[in-house]
Length: 135
Image 1: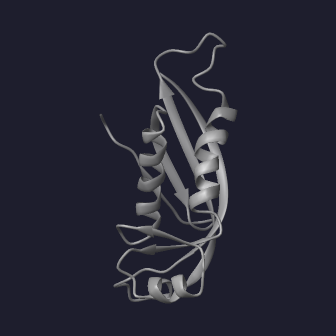
Image 2: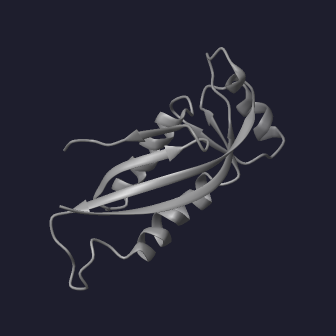
């Protein structure tokens, strides 16, 4: 099995609902994402995938939907206020935890047709969460 990993960086804000701690308040992070693809075979160039293709598609999706956005649960009461102010928001079905962001990016990468094996999302330099599926 061959694997390749591409790293992405973006800035975002969030808060966690039903959480007793500092992350219950609106705040920001510099996120880092590692997306690992896997394949039993290589293409005619000898690659799992050209890293540039991942950047052009998944990187663009991250830039357009997550970078410099406030990532909030759809049910967060702050959504209405921030929308009225014209602030950029990305709404999630779940709480915007590192675990749920790893899963979101995994599912988006898969939906774009890539053979994703794992996504690791770094919320800070010392804290990360990963998501992978066994299909």
